[in-house]
Image 1 (cartoon, protein in one colour):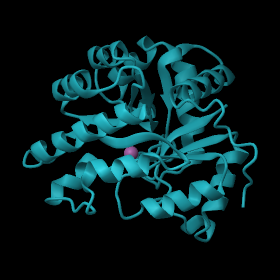
Image 2 (cartoon, protein in one colour):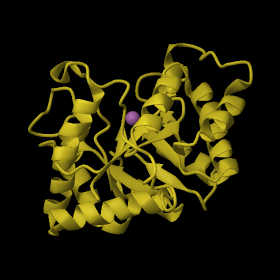
Image 3 (cartoon, helix red, strand yellow):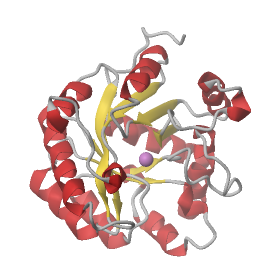
Image 4 (cartoon, helix red, strand yellow):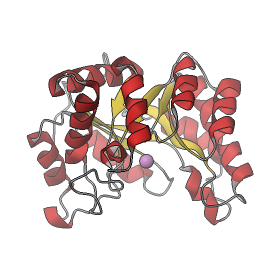
Length: 273
Ligand code: NI
């Protein structure tokens, strides 16, 4: 079951679809995408995302604050603080995971402490709620692994999303029970090293994602990305691993369901509106 395990539905460019999110999702469904995980990255848009996921049965949700949100100065939390907000948000019916959280030292070093504090809080709340955590990591390999090891719940684990690091980091993540999610970056011409990582990570540990609206795969590079393009990511993995496209869809879909514990959560009784 082809699943876009990471998309930001509140940020998509819907102009080709007359501002209709349903039409963008239909375009993906027509290409065989059967499930979507919409990733929350701020407090402001979260109520809108709850609204979407309550109405559309093949869209699941996560709750979190992106590490880059801290790069522009302190983030304002509601009265109950980050932990309180996350705990409450994390218990929303359609929320299957905590994040996007993590560490990104690429642009700014001023925010490192705030990013780390937030990451630790996300890991702790995820552990408490027994939900997997969606982790963004860039230029922060050692700290990411160290904090997961120290504060993460290895049972509920999580995913290193939009993976662009090396094999050593992938291995460390898998040793902590994490899945590795690949985006359209693996289709980029110069991504040889990353494709070698794809080759080595067992298909049983892989998820596929778009990270839309960002990082459109070849041949859409430079355009706004959307969930329908997860097909190109799955195809690329099939090619690298020398397995069928169907096998990649099937296995990564099963991995997704296992990580986010969808059994019993598949909401047959919910209707698309
Ligand atoms: Ni993201």
